[in-house]
Image (tube, rainbow, N blue to C red; front, side):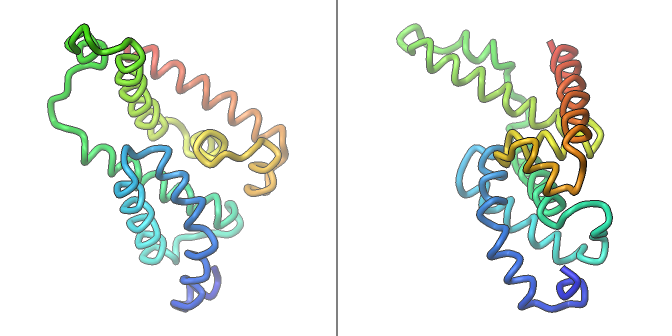
Length: 175
């Protein structure tokens, strides 16, 4: 990353090759379509290149920082794609014809709630959102997150617990 910060495009290409598969998985877990996830990854890495001087190794690993950037771009992508006036998930499910199986209705509700959860992540402290994102969207275990962020496992678990509690409160306030 030091080479990238000095403007080395070859080093940036290497970072992209190394981290883009995981970034795509993070974006795919947030976005509705593959093309949206690809756009989020591209936007994220373009943002990383443009703001490469703001990366501080002492605050965490490049992988964690870059996944957070990509996740934020994915959330932005979902928000841009969302229609301006959208009925609530329960209303949408109620409007479906009776011929539609309950599992499809459940999927509609779950998809809407997933968007709400992803949006709520943007409103909790970044350190807590980071560990939640790495665990649930990045597929990392607590110990892997601790290693990636160079934190004690207890700190990761504490951030996870506090972040999930704040997410629960935000989601309950929605209802």
